Image 1: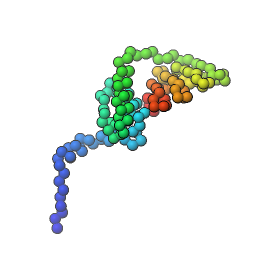
Image 2: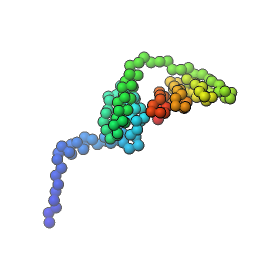
Image 3: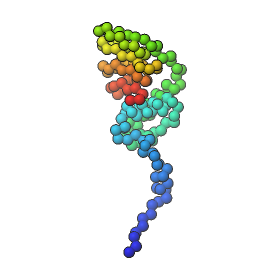
Length: 146
């Protein structure tokens, strides 16, 4: 008995071979959040990478929009002149506890300071947080590296 042989169109084979490793660069599953997409777009824009819309093609539309918005905002930051980082300092909380670091903030009786030069501290949504390029986003504070 002769086994049936199925042929695969050459274009499909070429497309599959060209995409070896693509899945590892595309956001999918639990990575498909607006916060992660925005942060990835922001970093791509800020550090001069090409905009890679394909990284979010497996995600919902709002995640794709967040990546593009992050890229545009990151690209605008890239062209801004560098701002001198906040100096190292110390701040005392109302209960007399002393905290030292960078860009220290006091909010609602809480004190926070950045751990490294260049960290920023912000207060938003009832939260006080310090880190690398922290910003309010979609109801919480996100920082690069989250």
